[in-house]
Structures are given as structure tokens and as C-alpha cells.
Length: 393
Image (cartoon, rainbow, N blue to C red):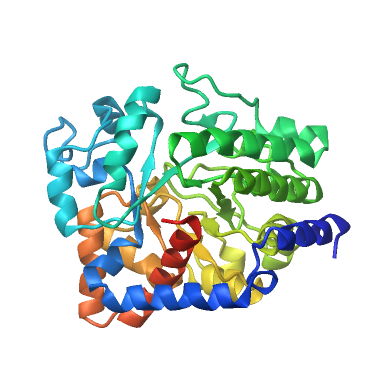
């Protein structure tokens, strides 16, 4: 085992991330609480916990009143600048509870608006967690908003280039501190990808390095910085988006690496995050034909999620998809196929479906028809509720 990884594990156990290092009675009590809650939940309440959506997904009028028609484009949604919970959202939420809400830059105006918006979200059915993509660098919804006076960071690549993991800790802790102040629970960061392809147009300097031995301790220290600030991090994009050329926001992308090649590169950073105790891992929508034998996106692949991530790497916490409204998914699957398919493949949380209501209804139907069992739903709900209780939510 690498010395830095061993040290990270020792430090992490000292903070009580691993169950083995924490009080066994507390762990039993937490599990009992979760089981008792699951027993009291309806199927709709359970399914709601498996969806984390943008606020626009609860306003069904948005998709019908725009010039672009039923499927509003990303530019349409940004132009609306939905920054408060409205009556339509409350009405939809009565039937469609939701486990989490992710805010984007257009949902955030300034501190005063955010201070009003977040309590409105917290009051929604499903007790949603508040999530954001705040990596630092070019992906920073608050950090790149001129109305917020917070510390800004050039890029994770620049931090990685310093060679000092303490700088990654500082970045994670600084970001975590202001996210906690504003009321967020989860930061979909850091990027654990290894930027090995110079033609990569989507990851680039979002990754710490093109060397996994450099990136891995940076990822672990960033996670620790977030945790010490009271925010839960999420490593992404499994099994690694750094060796692709295309952008999954718009369509098909692939890595042609074999699993052995990934184990010698991308898996070094992901295994470090898992050993540290990462609570969330986000999937990539990339195809890995030399691992799965097909062009199916990793998000929809049981080989990637069950066999590799859970089986071989031993990861037991939450698997969350990348946004399901991205082109790599929507150009191949409809809302129903995508939501049900990724749960079948082993994901726990469906992030950002293009149409939340359709996706939700499809999961309910899949359970009613036996394609998904309620026991399978319970597996994911159990992980989600455990994380929520650990956060005090």
C-alpha cells in the first residue's frame, strides 16, 4: 500500500469515518433507525429518495410554455432563472417527493436570495438535501458569481501542479466552509479523473493531474477539507472521464482502455477515495467497450457498477449518476429507460433526469410490474437515509 494512502486511512479512522473505527453501538442504533423509517415509508416516498433533481424539474409548466416545446433546452432553463419555490412546484411535490435538489448558477443570484430559497427547498416533501457543483476553477456556481465574496481558485490542475496535498485540503476546506455557511449538504467534488488525454475537452484542468500518484492524495485531502467544514464530497466520474475526447454533455464518449489499464491509472485515485471513506461516487456516461464488451454508458452498466465498483473495489456507499439529462443518455434512452436502467445496473441515486415526473412514474411502474423489486429499492434507500442521518438531516 502506498505510504500516502496508509496515512490517509489512519487519519480518516481518527475522525470516525469508518464504522470499524467508530462506536459499534452507535452504528447499530443508526441502522435500527434507518430500518424503522423504511418500514414506515410508502413506495412513493422511497422512490422519491432516489431522485436528486434541479428545481426546474418540479415546475412542470416550464416544459410547455417555452418556444422550444416540451423538452426545454438548457439555455431555456437558464433564461428562466428559477430562484424560488412556486405554487406549481409545491403541487407537483405533493405527489412527487424528492431526496435532493441541485442548484446551478442560474438558480443563485446573491446571498439574500439564496438565504430565502434554501429554507423553501428544505420544506419540500422528501426532506431534500441541498447539492451543488462547486469544484473550484471553472466549475464553481458560487465562486464564479461576482455577488459572492469567497475565495476563488484557478483550477485543480494548478493545485495539483504544486505537488503539495495541503493545498488541496485548503481548497476543499475553503469551499466547504462557505457552502456550509450558505446551507449546502453535498458538493459534487472533487474530480477524481486522471487527465491523461490532452485532447480531452470536458475534464482538462478540472482534474488534479495526468499522474494518478499525484492526483490520489489531492483527492483525499480535498475530501477531508470538505468533511472538516461539515460538507459531504463526491468523487467523480467513475470509472474515469480523463481519457476521453468527446463531451458526454452532448453525446457519445468512450474510453478504450482495458480494465487492467484502468487499474494502473484511474482506479488509483478512486481506490484512494474509497479507502478514505467516500460517501458518494458519481458515474460517468462514457462507454468502456474494452471492459464491458459493449457501447453501453458506464452509468447503465452492471459490469461497471456492480462487478467492478461494488464487487472488485468493495465500495459500499452511494452510487449517484451524472446528470441523466446529458446528451450521452438522452440520445440513447428515454426518461423511463434511463431511470429504470441505471437502478437495475446498480446506481442508488438518479441525478437530474430530463423529465422527473416521467422518470419517477417509470420506476414506480417497474416495481409494480416486477422489473425492479421493492427490496432492490430498499437497498438504495437504506444507503441514502443512512447518509442523511449521519448529516443530521
